[in-house]
Image 1 (spheres, rainbow, N blue to C red):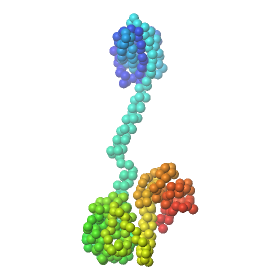
Image 2: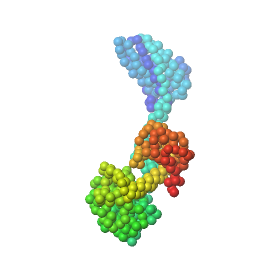
Image 3: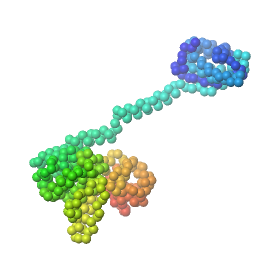
Length: 406
């Protein structure tokens, strides 16, 4: 009967029908054609429009209840808006269907192209999300992969013993000594480049020579072998600090958080000796009791430990600030310098106000303003670190990129 289907139409006319009596579907369709014939002129004659494919197949759905018929009429149209509206209005002139009174009411004229356009937009969003998640890693992921690859290439052979080492051994005053090459690689992966490996159980002459010139932190595995290496190093080299990986773990497999936690928990060698060579606690153990400075020697040890802790903390702040440059973001840190979260600098004041407590330091890629410092003071932040500062007087320790680079 018709030559086009609803999917090829530009508009869909939707009408309701109420009939005081019982009629069949063909009666309704016949009334639509019959009672509109000659009403709109030859150009808008429904039969001719359907033959030419400008009006599609008219669909009628009816339901009979209590001797009355109600239902829906669907008229697809590829005419323009004005012509479609005229056809719709003509349908409302139908007053009888068969022997029964009837009332037709146009409920809606739907623009099919808008519906299709909305479908295209929503479907495109879904496809783009799938493409992004499965095949297109974000820029940070790409940056991390490239950085990791570069760090892996930075392993060098150092000294006459050709020990695996990071690229900053000669430049750094503080050196981290680990057990093997895999340990060096893991520390490089996390951005620590002043590392050198023993490459065995005996202590090479290269390490002994370095211990005379550098501040040495011995970082060993969390097992019995690590304890033996500590004793060996204490006998033949000048070690300044000792730390261990968590129990049962090796330095080569620990995470970034475990790594920095272990380094922050390192013990000065003088303290270890004063405690009678007691085993070094790892980052998962209970903290050792503070030694009261009852003697001059103990006070010197404690002061040196605090000074070294401040130096290490400044190094951590500098690394975190370097990571943020160009991101316009801010790190919120706890008292172990663990990252509690990263937020845009513009959202930092509201974030600090909402957290209110438990924040030890904030590192931000931007200028420390008076407003930020005031909010930080209220929530008892101890350190604010930024690229620059407009704050002259504050109860908070304010550090800038320039100060950290000195």
